[in-house]
Structure formats: C-alpha cells, structure tokens
Image (cartoon, rainbow, N blue to C red; front, side):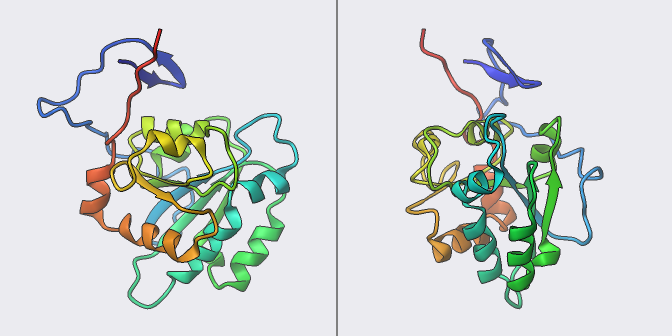
Length: 207
C-alpha cells in the first residue's frame, strides 16, 4: 500500500484506525478561501494540466456548465446551500454570466490559479468533476487521496476506480442534470457524506 504526502507518492504502509477506517483530519484551511455565508462546499478543479491552455474548451470538457445548471436546479426553498469553488486559471466570464442568469451567482466562486491546490481540497466537503471526456482524471484520484467523496461521470476513466454509492457517485452522463443535482443533495447530508469520506483513500501499485 502507499499514500500521497505533499503531492508525492510514498510506498509505505499507512496505519488506519483499529476498525480499518480512514481517519480524515478536520479541514484547517477554510479561512484563506471565500466564505460569504454558511453552507456546504464542493470543489471543482479545472486547468489541472499545464498543457490545457485552451481554458474555455477545457472547462467545457470538464462539465462546468452542467455543474452550474445542476446547482441552480437544486436551489429551491429548504435545500441546504452549496457553494461551488472553481479552481483554475483563465477568463471565467462566460460561466459567471451563466451562474448569474440562473440565480446562483453568489454561490459560485472562481478562485483563479492556485500554486498549492491542497488548500482547495482541504477547504471542501466533496469534489465534483462531471467530465465529458477524460481518460483518467488525476484530480479525482487526488480528491480520493484527500478523503473527499467524489462525483464524476461515466466518461471519466477515473470513475472505474470508484464503486458508485460508496466513494461517491458516477453519473451516467455529464449533462444528466437531475442525476447530478440528486447526487449533490445526497452529499449535503452530513452522515451520508461521512460514510463516503475516505472510503477509498489509498492505492496499491502493481510492480
């Protein structure tokens, strides 16, 4: 077995609790990130690849638009608020306008480029990447290694590392708005999210 420490893989044994469960430390880094009001946070990371210079195309492939639409679909009276943190460079005006038009502008925070994306993971309650295409998304594995439940799509090869409903949820399609909104609702439940947090946080490497 092994584990991820400070962005580097270490081939060493990781001691869990006596019951075998992963013990995730409480988030320590909410303050550096915007928190205008109480609510749950989920994380969307784009521009993870340094060669993905066509930012708008990249964000479109990563499913940011259906994610914003799903956020709007569940933005009804009585629903627990979710704040979306969008990490990555580029010009987000198109998506900001979409969020404002759908009435969720105050819930969508574009953080820009972060040298240390760990701050974003540690400030989030779960991770969402409803990709239209990705052979195997590194950020999904990073999120799992950080003990975060994940929502991704069947178009993302990293979803094959997950058991749907255990480490999070694998959508049948990235633009399955109702399905994504339902998954978001499930992860606003603290008990349900805790059962998935850290459910798959380490990997073994075949030699």
